[in-house]
Image (cartoon, rainbow, N blue to C red; front, top):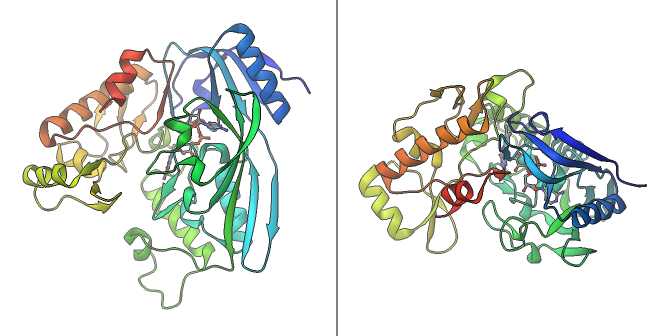
Length: 358
Ligand SMILES: Cc1cc2nc3c(=O)[nH]c(=O)nc-3n(C[C@H](O)[C@H](O)[C@H](O)COP(=O)(O)OP(=O)(O)OC[C@H]3O[C@@H](n4cnc5c(N)ncnc54)[C@H](O)[C@@H]3O)c2cc1C
């Protein structure tokens, strides 16, 4: 099958922000062979390529992208079980939340707290998707990927993916090298659900028996809906990329300084040795921004201060203006620089350095 090449395709409808200009070229790739065709096309044209999944962690520039967008639509699920575990191998184009639902239905534990996260299977290893005490790196065993450097298909083990908080090989040292084709996850048969996070535990305060996987999935989706972190068609609070800023990870010394400025109430979560993770939402709120804050057609979600939303008609510049205001005020108040979580596409290098350099 040959890949179909489209020109000047609007990207905004393919992102959850509903923002951004056009892709010069756009290629849908439903198979591994068409991935190869798409890469050859970009190389022939001497243009950069960008891999698009569900567009849920993406801010596209108003001027669009002058290269080749490769939309990965590889489908397929394979299940392989032994007594204790089931390995599921999922095509990168499968919808992540559909996979979670199917696993929960089959009584497979390990990703139930990742319910309701939008996007594709292929997007999950990129930023090591996580929520409510689980991360995909807890269960991922390997990634099948197309290597743009060698034009070959490779299998990467979990260790080779180098997962940390919201990061992996795919968005750091080997950024733009691999195209994820398929991901394998190892799940526990008839496993008990994970309810490590306070928010989730609270949903079961009145329950004496251990909740089922399905109950935990439902609870996580309820919590997400309350925070507009579940995509609901027509809800303006959902025109976002989820959390716009990462939770800062700082040294113990920096955290001590932060406590001096912010007071004792500042949240602290475990991170790598010698490091502390704190809450971006807390910093934003205590810098004086409240839910629903607006700056023109961009704003903060009315349900969650960490989500920047397109209230309707916002462009990428409106989002950047608001992001700058928040980042700068948090920095002035607390001395911590907030770094965006979504990927920026089509912006010039000055904008990328301004937002992503610490
Ligand atoms: C309402 C909402 C809630 C969210 N909640 C969470 C949350 O709780 N936790 C969390 O971690 N994230 C969350 N997100 C962010 C987002 O859903 C995840 O990061 C998701 O995994 C992105 O997948 P995607 O397919 O949409 O990727 P895209 O947005 O299409 O792309 C994001 C990045 O991944 C790369 N990519 C995508 N597919 C591939 C592939 N096949 N091969 C190589 N690279 C690829 C892209 O090139 C890009 O760099 C949320 C987003 C929204 C809108």
